[in-house]
Image (cartoon, rainbow, N blue to C red; front, side):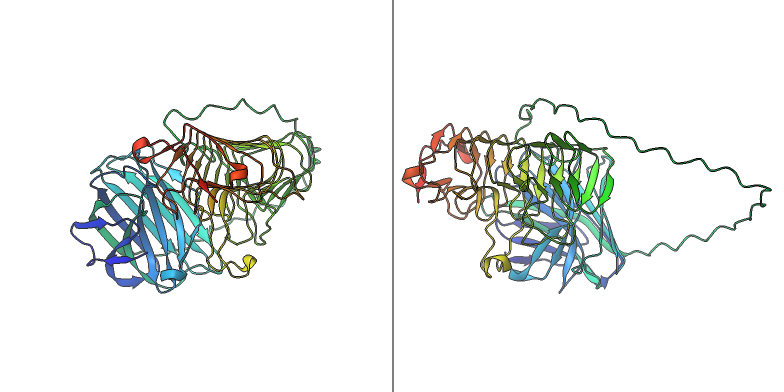
Length: 488
């Protein structure tokens, strides 16, 4: 990824965004530790295809990395914002998402001003706050705290960056105004003067604590909705709904009671399902300090059926061992899964993934779990199972494949696999039916294939013995029908 540097921004600065290259505009000339960066930018036109344009402001930018408030503008004008940490530089650079994603309330138009701010304070705990707004609309805020060993405690400079993928057209942007200024840590509030209460003549009686109340059985999960009319899933239609308050659960959550409902919880560990009928909704699962490849949400030890919906799964502490949703006999609806190696790993029968956004996979060029070779990250990896449906999803950001189908006979025999009405891109070839998946013919219908992949034109690769059933698939560019697959 090349770097294009421009003079420090003060007055308006025009930028040519070249596909596959990072364009960087330094802001200010002084390195600061506790700092706030603000930038107002515009795009001369919106991307007509591809994964969108990434506009970012950086604080503490230096040799060790930077903190980033990143706005992703999609071709339809939707803008989602998150806070990320960059460690290293050049080819050794790694990027970690350390906040949730928020979507701005309105869509942006060509020429409209997008204002981003990022404030970074502290050393042992780095407190981060970002805001974003379009024009004169109200700001949306996202925040994070970084106590990891990879946190950036050194002072650094400010910058504005733009990036669009190789398959996107070249664009023009402008930095209308920017600033990078020092901020002070808030002084601790003075302790209030406490007037001692007079000692009562006799202690007040203490009421015993009430007996714990058993939770009510879970209601049946709602019927599956249709794909949103506005198009394929984004941050606006997946994950924890806006306005939901989450209660933190520290450590793993092992579910052993049938029909349990987990609602409005942030689990700082994994959820291990060992009872039938469990429903997880409106929740966030981020893992703990020890990564385990069984998944952040899993039923691999029980195979018990469950439903998970309107929730977010990601590894707060990124690691090559973390995967997202792993197992069999589950239904996943409107999920936002990212920052793991495999967002979904299917190990058996009866799996439905619908209306979900699987994106921004974790990837290591030298993965210690693969002998120092690159990570084998897929949006969905199917190792075995029948009655598997992937429908109405957006899958992007995997290096190996959006959908990887293999046959691990020690887990489960492959059966019917249906991949329909999804937006699919990235990977070497985007749908990869491995040679081990012999005599299985996945049904691949009515999907839109985006422009991004390593091998141009390779939407689907499969052996002749597992030739996919193709119908109604198109390239996003020009809506050209896809009638063939690559034999591999």
